[in-house]
Amino acid sequence: MQISLENQVAVVTGGSRGIGAATVKLFAQAGAKVVFSYRKEARAARDVVRRSGGHAGNVVALRADISKMADAKRLIDGALRRFGRVDILVANAGIWNPQPAPIATMTERQWDKMMAVNLKGVFSVIHHAARYMIPRRSGRIIVVSSTAGQRGEALHTHYGASKGGVISLVKGLSTELAPHGILVNCVAPGWVDTDMCVPVIKNPPEYQKALASIPLHRFACPEEIAMPILFLASEMASYMTGGVVNVNGGSVLCG
Image 1 (cartoon, rainbow, N blue to C red):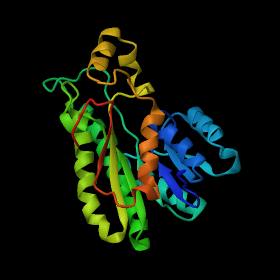
Image 2: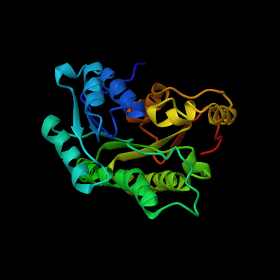
Image 3: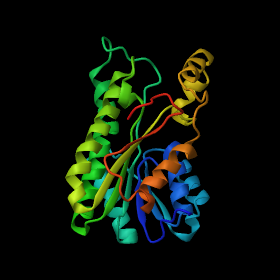
Image 4: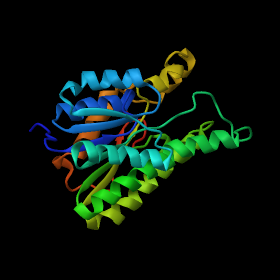
């Protein structure tokens, strides 16, 4: 059975590249109308719109820094103005530090920036989407976490903490929003072949170390993360909430 998102409106944060871009394109192929955010990459955002069939007006890019509550509100409001509803929210936007950040030398700014984007950014966009979904008693929220949120990550502890916080947020919201007919789940990718991971991919010792931690011995492509996101957004996942879907090649074997 083919997954269909016909007559659904989705908002995807961080949709100009990587997992977000793959999700936008897959949702559009499934028939959804999509509004996605980008922060800096306007050219990449335009390219995603073009490759997703946005010439028909069904895929729209909006510039927004979702670590700011006002921008998150503007993103959700923009989707409502354009398409009249928000059925699905994919909180994907996030950052990672390619350079080691030992706890003894990590700066307050490094910590605050990571939390602002990876944790507050998820809260801010869910906050505004939920205010619309609750009265309608319907909605799907999918958050992108990480294996680092499940097992921690030495020298990147602020990243692991932010992604672990996301998992806890999902579990709490799943029970809070279930009475309103809103399903909340997350996917936890491992290493993915995206721009964010280029510093590791181009560093042979680090790349081999990363490969050695993956039983399938390869990085995922963005589409391999987007497909489980599509599943969680569909009617096929109508009895799933509070779930952590591992998409990591076997590198973390527990949820």
